[in-house]
Length: 262
Ligand code: SAM
Image 1: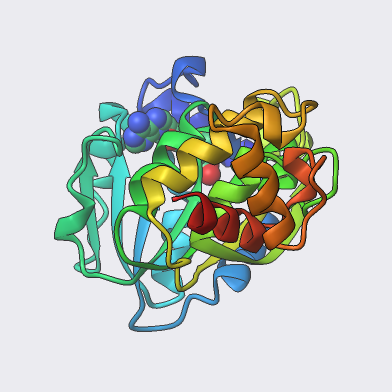
Image 2: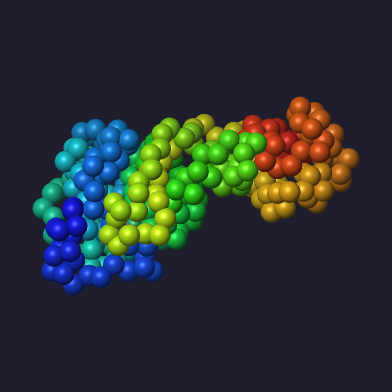
């Protein structure tokens, strides 16, 4: 939907963009097209769309031949989308964080221009269930942290978390001018493909990672609440330096370190 269609549409349904729901709507059809291409949506695919809003992406997903489950929290948009006559579209008025995604078919594709304020809780929910791929618009800075390599200054617990559950497939930047209202920052579409998750006790793994990255400038030996000598021995055993900082370890080294320490 371009701006000259969106404004009268919002007026007709009596909706004003709500900042509390991160409502920045896409007004660039080329970006919508590129999202569908990035997600490789094909006829017969089943897609979960989070936060369809006025429905630009929803229509494009349907046009690509997908069956769409659209979960929208704002009743005005959910009601309006519910008037679309298309048996391939099912609209749910719900908070995605409370929505029973386990009732949807497993291994579906997820496509969304995400409500930015709840990006991490949404990822936590999605990663807890089998999915195929996740093509999402997020803040550029968040996408950069998600896809950062170890050794970089922005490699942190978000990078480890996202890369534990998925492989970054591709991404592209979307300027603020492609949205109404304009957000203060640029955005990035990032595609994450499900991967075989590492063979490690997840709670222990993430507890260690979070502890270490809370004090990212300190050596891992001093932050893990474990005997320094044990951590030092484990670091040497996995081929890392004993004075390593958290961003110096790759994801697989974090997995190995957890295995050595548990
Ligand atoms: N998909 C539309 C687009 O690209 O133009 C809208 C994207 S807008 C960034 C985010 C959408 O998520 C809004 O429609 C908003 O109402 C919806 N939303 C916000 N919080 C939500 C939640 N907890 N559960 C479901 N939808 C939510």
